[in-house]
Each structure stands twice: as structure tokens, then as C-alpha cells.
Length: 281
Ligand SMILES: Nc1ncnc2c1ncn2[C@@H]1O[C@H](COP(=O)(O)OP(=O)(O)OP(=O)(O)O)[C@@H](O)[C@H]1O
Image (cartoon, rainbow, N blue to C red; front, side, top):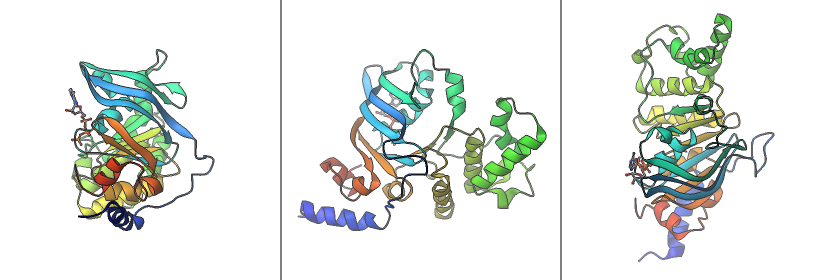
């Protein structure tokens, strides 16, 4: 029978080498939250898929959302850009503020909101267009037409997403000709091209091989400090490696939200400890 203290030591040694204690990005401090949830819930009919969340996600840092299947990770992610509005029977309660503005307030322009938040899904989903047109798509929607300006945006975001070296000589090739890992980096470039307030990633590496996964993780490291990133992942080692903060959800409830140095090395809740020790989920 493993004692609690032995389990804690095992967890700590497993995650010690993964968790990085990075300083807050320049111009931000510890309490600087871009997204604040206050008693925030999402219901499907009467069923609370996420329930009474209360937390602040830090600006220009990376927050991971972890928890067993069905705990509400995607529901929360979709609530941030109000994709939940499109689901019949879904409703929210409580407050969510982005940069101090009520996401669910009467004055929020939902089209504007969705255009300010980049989203990347589990399976890479580039448009069946050229690499260039995929990246230029969002800026064009925002009314940018000047060719030089678009060229600059395409080059900048392909560099930010660590794809430029591989595609600079074939920008007009179809995006579907790229490998799965390259397609996912292109989707990240497409999300960055709109200069988003936030980038939401829903299990972005679960369909990729280990090498492509490592490239995406390295890319996230580069994005940190410039963009606010929220990543849903089933992989606890990945959460420990790439993020600064982690939210652990269980059956829609917020069990623990903390810096990774706490959540993975010194969890405050026994359920967190059991989950990251792999005892359930
Ligand atoms: N459109 C919907 N209508 C009704 N219930 C839903 C709907 N979408 C999700 N749910 C339920 O809400 C709960 C949370 O689902 P959600 O997809 O957010 O979980 P998850 O943590 O992202 O799961 P997974 O890790 O399997 O992707 C689950 O019980 C799910 O069955």
C-alpha cells in the first residue's frame, strides 16, 4: 500500500524536471488576468457541464485545462469565444470578463469577439487553399487588401509559427500538400494572423507524431510572452511542460487552479494529486 507521502514524492519526482518556473512576461505581474471567471457555469439544459468556476487566466502566459473525459474542458474553451451560443439548449450563468469587458454582456459584439480569439482544433483543418491564402484569410476578412501589408503579415506569422523555413519557396502550393504537423502549425499561423487577444488550442497535438508534437510544444514556448494561450490537453506531461498555470476540472467542478509549480509539485487537493498520479481518468 502506497502512503500519501510516498505518492507525493513520486509525483514530485515525475514532474520536477517538466515544470518550469518562468518569470511573468515583461509588462505583466502576477495578478494580471486577461480572462476572469466569476461563478461562471455552462448548462446543457439542466445539466451543469462546467459549474461555478472562479479564476483569472494570466495575460500572455499559457494556461492548460486538464481533467478526465467529459469534465467540461471543451465546453469551457467554447464558452470563451461564445461558440456555445450556437448549441441549442446551452446557456451560461455567472460572469466572464475578457480584458474587463463582459463576454456575455449586451454590449459585446460576438462577431468581433470571435475574430479576436484564434482557435486551433485537434485535427488540423486548413482551408483547401494555398498556404498564403490560409494565413491571409483572417486579415482579408478584417478588410486588409494591400498586397505588401498581407505579404508582411504572412511572413511574420509563418515565422512565429516556425513554418517559414519549410514553406517560403512554395507559399502558393495547396495547404493540403503539407504534412499533418505542418498543417497544424499553419492553423496556428492562421490564428495568429488576426493578432488575437487569445489563442485557444483544443488538444492540438493529439493527432500528431512525437516529432511534430515536440515542434508544436517548442512553438508554444516561443509564443509565450507575446500571446495568451489556453490549451486543452489529455496529456499531463504536456500540460506540465508547456503551461505556466493549470486548471484541473472534474465533473464540471474546478478542483484546483494554480501555477504549475504548485499544481504538479505540491497539489493542494487530494483529487488533483490522485489524478496527476494517474489513479483515475
Ligand atoms: N451539445 C451538448 N449537449 C448536451 N451535453 C453535452 C453537449 N456537449 C457536451 N455535453 C456534455 O457536457 C459534459 C462536458 O463535455 P465536454 O465535451 O466539455 O468534456 P471534455 O472534458 O472536453 O471531454 P473530452 O476530454 O472527452 O473531449 C459531458 O458530460 C458531455 O456529455
